[in-house]
Image (cartoon, rainbow, N blue to C red; front, side):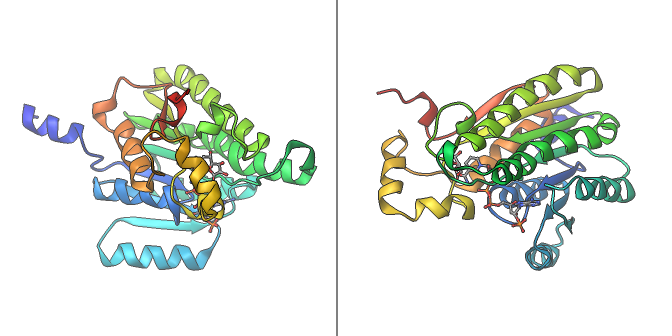
Length: 261
Ligand SMILES: NC(=O)C1=CN([C@@H]2O[C@H](COP(=O)(O)OP(=O)(O)OC[C@H]3O[C@@H](n4cnc5c(N)ncnc54)[C@H](OP(=O)(O)O)[C@@H]3O)[C@@H](O)[C@H]2O)C=CC1
Ligand SMILES: C[C@H](O)[C@@H]1OC(=O)[C@H](O)[C@@H]1O
């Protein structure tokens, strides 16, 4: 391989096989599209079959190598089904992006046990269990990668709910543990910690002008982020060019997390 070719491959995802959870909307869709445009083959997962079918049809008109499954990854049975599908389709895996997550925004005393369990299952258990289940396939890759989509709410207090913050902080700790444990298997594990990104999940609160102003007042760059700005960071961390980066958490936040006073 000549120097130029190796340099070119360093900045692409050519031939890599990636699973992106929550890939029909928002950050997950942007990550899947970034990966596809960089030469990867992608499987996406979401609950709504109609949205999955519509997006896959759009990608297939562009000859993009994408497939998908309508599964609820808060459920252990569906996580096992996804694993079986990946084994059946590819028999190996290069990239896992644990992107699925949701929030119920309440004061701590207002949460029910059911709400607590839903957030834990959706945001954290799904990421932990899928990392476990897909480890053998990632181990077969010479360049395995896991990207955990955390949040700045895993780094700081946000007024958007303690349970969500707990799950995101735990994803960052899981990133560190798996990065060390699985380094001998050539599996790198990194986390991204976005601040507000313009997606359907965030729009629920960003559409309130007063709330949006409060967000912008805490954001040095003066705007919310775009899904593609998170996707670019995810793509870089999975590239050969990032081959010595593991166990890290990268904030995608317009300066939010370093803004004191
Ligand atoms: N947007 C933001 O400001 C920030 C987001 N994040 C994190 O980024 C990640 C993505 O967020 P965002 O893009 O905003 O979210 P969206 O709600 O916009 O999209 C979530 C995606 O995940 C899918 N999904 C949700 N629940 C499940 C489930 N149980 N099983 C399978 N698929 C599911 C949705 O499809 P369907 O409904 O069909 O299942 C959709 O494709 C989350 O982990 C979130 O916590 C972190 C910081 C900031
Ligand atoms: C920025 C936060 O982590 C994130 O944005 C959302 O929409 C969630 O409710 C979280 O607060």
